[in-house]
Structures are given as C-alpha cells and as structure tokens.
Amino acid sequence: MVKDKTASDVSKMIKDKDVKLIDFKFTDLLGTWQHFTTTLTEYNEEIFTDGLGFDGSSIRGWRVINASDMLVIPDPATAWIDIFNAEPTLSLICTIVDPITREPYDRDPRGVAEKAEAYLKSTGIADTAFFGPEAEFFIFDDVRFSYDGNSSMHRVDSVEGHWNSAREEFPNLGYKIRPKEGYFPVSPMDSLQDIRNEMCLELERAGIAIERQHHEVATAGQAEIDIRFAPLKRMGDSLQYYKYIIRNVAKKHNKTVTFMPKPLFADNGSGMHTHISLWNGDKPLFAGNGYAGLSDLALFFIGGILKHAPALTCITNPTTNSYKRLVEGAWAPTTLTWGIDNRTVALRVLSGGNKSCRLETRVIGSDVNPYLAMAAALASGLYGIKKKLKLQQATEGNGYRDFTHGTIPTTLHEATEAMKESPIVKEILGEKFTNHFVQTREWEWRQHLKPVTDWEMRRYFEII
Image 1 (cartoon, rainbow, N blue to C red):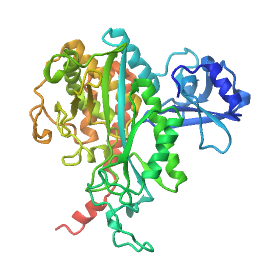
Image 2 (image 1 turned 180 degrees about the vertical axis):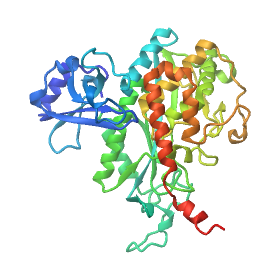
Image 3 (image 1 turned 60 degrees about the horizontal axis):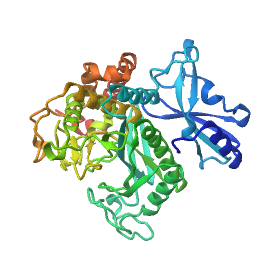
Image 4 (image 1 turned 90 degrees about the horizontal axis):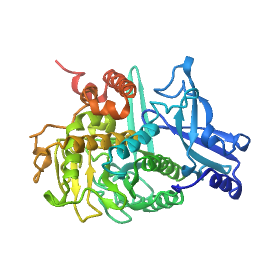
C-alpha cells in the first residue's frame, strides 16, 4: 500500500494488471473484514468521492433493516492486487458514510481511527502517532470443535505439538516442541520457517514493511511476524491485510491460522505487543532528560494509559477467551504497572536512543479490532498529557507481584463494567458507539455463561 496513491494511479493499476474485478473491503464492529465485489462496469474514478451503496443491516452490530442504506468510500492509497482470487482482482479498503448526510458512520472502526488522528493534530501536541504491532498467531494442521445439547469438544493439532511424540507418522522423526520451548529453535524443530517467509514476502508485495519473523514460545506452530511502524489508520489497514494474507497463505499449504488469544491450555497465548511513539515532523517527543531518558510528555502519556487501562481492556481484549491469556506466567501482564525494559509489566519503555525511544503496551490481544485499540490507546495517552497526570513509580522487579496500583480485569465482564464508567472512551469513540459496543460485550459475556463445559463435567458430575 503506497501512502500517496491517487485515483488515477488506481486506474493505471487496473489497466496495467489487466484487472477484471474490484473488491471493496471494510471492517465491522469487532474487526472482521467484510467485502463485496463488482466488475469493471461499476468502476470509475468518481467512486473515490461518491462511494458505492450497500445494505448495512446484515453487518454485525450496524444498521437496522428500516434504515440500512450506507456508502463505502474506497481509499485509493490501499489499492492492492489480491493474489488469492482466480481472476485478476483489485482490493480497496473503505470508510463508511451515511448516504444522506455524508457524515462518517459512527460505528465504522476505520472512521474512528480517522477521528483519532484528527483529534491528535487538533491538540497541537504532535502531528503523528506511530504504532508498531507484534501480532502473534498459531498455524495449525487441523482444528475441530462442536457443541450441542448433550456434548461438546474441541481439538487442534500440529505436527510440532509435543502430544504427537508417540504418534505414528510413517516415520515420526521427533523434533516436537515442548510447552513454552518454541522461542526459537532452528529447523527441523521449527517446521514452519518456509511458510512464515512466504507470508513475509507476500506482505511486502502488498506494501506492508516487515521487520522480522520467528517461531514464538508456545508449541504447535505459534508464530510472530512484526510490521514496521506506521501512522494509526495506515497501521490499522496494514493489520487487516496482514491477517487476510497470513490466513490465505496458510490455506494454500493446507494449514489454518488463528488469532484466538488462547487456543491451547497450559501454554502461552497470542498477544499483540504494540509499540507507540509521538512525533512532530522529524522530532520524536518521548525522548528527554527525565527518568530513564524520557520526556515529561512521555511520562504523562504513560500515566494516561495506566489510568484508563481497565476500561481500555474491553477494547484491546474484546473476547471472553482474551482473559485466559492474561494470566501470570504466560508472558502476559496481569497488573497495572510500567517499567524500563521489563517484560512483566503492562507498559514497557524502550529507551534505547532518541529516535528509538517508545512505549510498548503488552496487554493488547491478537483478537483485537486494530483501529479501535490504537485509537483508544492514543486518546488515553493524550488525556494524560493534557491533565499532566502524575505517574506512579516504575516497577523494577516482578510486575506480576506488584499489586500497588491494581490489576488488569480478569474477565470480559469486569472490563465491560470499567468501560461503562470511562469518559475518555466515550470521548474518542463517541457515546453511541461506546454504548453499543458495551451492549455487544455484555451479550457475549451472558452467552459465555450458558454452555456446560468439559471442565464442569469432570469436576461436578460425581459431586456428593
């Protein structure tokens, strides 16, 4: 994705690449990509300003059927030739607007990201917020799950899984990764190097700069591919392409990818540690002469994020499964702490030089809606700067044991209750958006409570 690509550039791409179809993609409330496709009959350069109509009533969490008309406004900067279609297809990411008022739709996550970037500039504090996510995921060979009235089951499998040490594989060559020992051996223990390399190269062909890739800590194919930092909305677009490309490369090899935070019991889950920095032009704003080489602005920013962290967790960890990752001993934070180069805290400072000085939030999960998570983190940090929030002492020891300033919510229900009380979330996301998002998370929590689990059967069937 080239930042300054124009409508005429897209038209040239269509001609040069002999494109036959245009695919219009947009993001729903929870971060899932939706799309529809047209032939070139529908294409002209006016669509980048006039948009195309569609029915929003069937999109999860959006419009009611009696007021369902909406417009997608494609962004020419996101144009990419989608290699996973049989016919030459151009892909475009879109923002959603009301067809009558032409106002941005208040439940469009990409629109929220645009609003957050505009808000940042309006403060005069900085002109750009850069984000650098480290998304983790699992590459499985097989996945099965089922639930009905009298039974339930799930099973995931990988040739790397330690449980396959005794499986007949004609022959079984060994080299199975034990729990928490996947970081990061070479081949043949790491069996997924070639697939991850292919994912990286396809991402770069799509214009998404990649820093590095490697096997992650867990057994059974846990992986990480890091995207080079970019501004908020552009990074949100890149993460959507990232998930799409990674999943489809895996499918080509008859494998499946999940960004579910905790698909395995008793091993590490998948987070999305995200680096954040503020800049004015070429000047980084987090480096200074304060504690650990930080500026006052950076310290205030940390204070804002920590103050609003319980409410932010509903956005950065929006599923019930998220909280099975946020447990001690799994490289995931559990307390409201910060520190210098300390991987047990919620917010880690990397202070290795003027331009490389940045913050890393370690709470965000891979199941996140990237536009919303980054927008909310930015707004919370800016709140801390505006209020000059006094920062608690940095944690130098084990952050898992530092309960001085409280803990991260342990369930989606706790996070949802915290979000209800947060004015900063409503300020950046809008009150209608926030209220609706809370309603969807409350509904999901209630549904989560209903099923009878295998654990309960083992625990209680023979109870006296």
